[in-house]
Length: 606
Image (tube, rainbow, N blue to C red; front, top):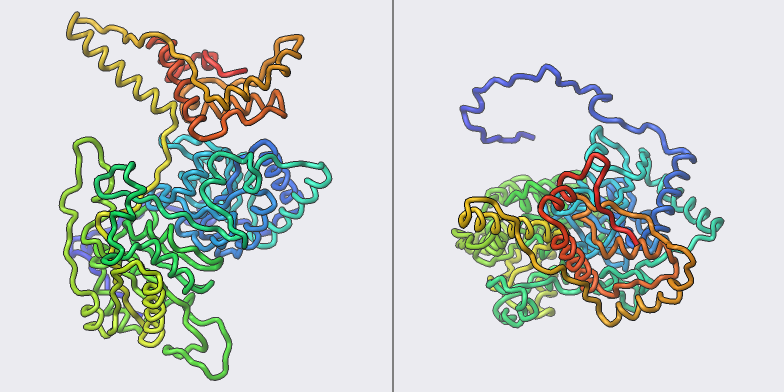
């Protein structure tokens, strides 16, 4: 088929100079694994995973879309169930595992951020990541400062050169047939666990797992995940009003998008293709659609291309992946193939859809089949408008108008479009059902979802570690003191931060620490834990987590001292307050930024 490329004439006239060192020989581009993994490699991976699982209560499996291409959904679910750990997927990996089971915690990595509140909680509290066919591991392993703060076990089919140069993996496993290898790894882990009589600490099904995991999703009596509503904010950006967001919305004039997408989930098949645009609509789709295992999600990932939703739907509807897979003798689809065409769901906002409206004509020209286009209309560029850009900064020029999309699609040859302006679930159900009937009969159909512009979803981001917050605050205060001292005396003075504060423990935490008294009094000599150097990398670590790890190392029967995430956060803040106020500027610079020739001068130890 011919493709028309709109390319400026000045670009057309340019000569391309080929780099002298450009070399496409396979050994310089990729290291392909041409053989299946042997028993030694399989056993090595099984041992590495078990070793980290025995040390960690907070492990997570993070997989990308190629895990679906390799057919690893069942194997990943089986491994997650055995290890009793959660599964997260990249946005374009949505559908690798079924999101209706208790091990799925949604997606992470929506246009450069975490995106979902469930996955954010898991990632902030985990310490080991099993990455399966995951090309971008920044959200899986890094903190806000892009420092690796979690251990990595990497499982890949084709490890590109340079993949391991940015992040350090505790164990790397390569196989060109993971669909065969991964079940063998699971069996090896089961055998080793039984022989060694190992007992996992914590887990999704155990109350001591902690870290917010069990609080984000509720598992119902059928073993399925009951999705909590996405955090919402009214347009004044005040998180305190988040619980009132649905009350702000007029459910008789507007449709709540997440409710719409949850109901849409029931009408999607295991081979359906989901095409995401960018903006609030993508957040609603990522959180609302409970993906079935086998579904494929197409996104523009970090590029964040407005208009991508309709373009990718065009490609999906015409590609071989959208052709029927069922065999029949009489039934024939519109394009001559036997059986039912896969459903293609295209989602876009009123800003994104107007970036690529011309492709509706292309769909008509080439006979796209079974495409349902959902346009979420809020009359603004919501993600830009609703983002917090900083003190005194605001986003202007975000309001926009829209054509009558129903008439527009009819003009292109796709009549009978529908508009949803209610959150009545019965009406939503019927509208979606009619939408797919029209998509099947006429090729393409449209549903316009009227969203209340006063209500929008939260783009969840990894919270910076308390150490970074404390250090940045300290530097700001130091600069203030320096400026004041220089202006008044002509010289730079040292900041004065007053008396060193103490730690503030809750009554529950205090009682747990008191319960260790008999154990401590049983010592005849001084006992010490392992230690962790306090330096720049320590800023990304939770002191509460280090304390608990060291305490458990010394006493395996020690309780989880901090029962809630709030108690952990309070301990971390108190710890850094003590450090920042207990040392001079020069000492802190030495500790945090420079270290010494013999390593860092300060360490954390029980």
